[in-house]
Length: 190
Ligand code: SF4
Image 1 (tube, rainbow, N blue to C red):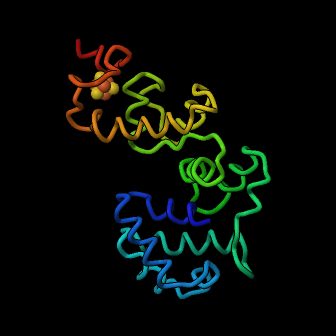
Image 2 (image 1 turned 60 degrees about the vertical axis):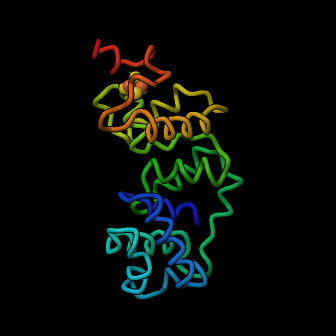
């Protein structure tokens, strides 16, 4: 559940800002049921550093409400479910898309999945793994067809690292890139 909330907080902001907001949220409330039942203004204030807090606060409260309208919200039960059932459950929650669901699957439940963030999406297009018109949400299915399950975690982490340090959105450093010979974007420049 923490991974789910933190991933919602990370939408459209940096890791640093979303982590600050998550820490502030945990300090302001002692349980997820307190977050769910608090006035929305109090949650909005606590997560201010994440940006778009007036959208994210009601979204988090709706998700907690949906998971458990009474008592303490908990997602432990997902551990015993098949991967596709978990994905189906998570993406049916309000405001939870394929990337957020994939983060929970991969990082919290240890199940194979590929979260497609901005780096993974950009790189997959440049390398020719998906067509340039494939939206990020649709890229999840395509990449999960291409990558063997046991390699999904490494694939995700390496794509993010490569996107951050080499294949930048603006001015990618082709000259030091080890993927040049496999890259459609590079080939088109020659
Ligand atoms: S060759 Fe250039 S565009 Fe292709 S993956 Fe490397 S840095 Fe990115």
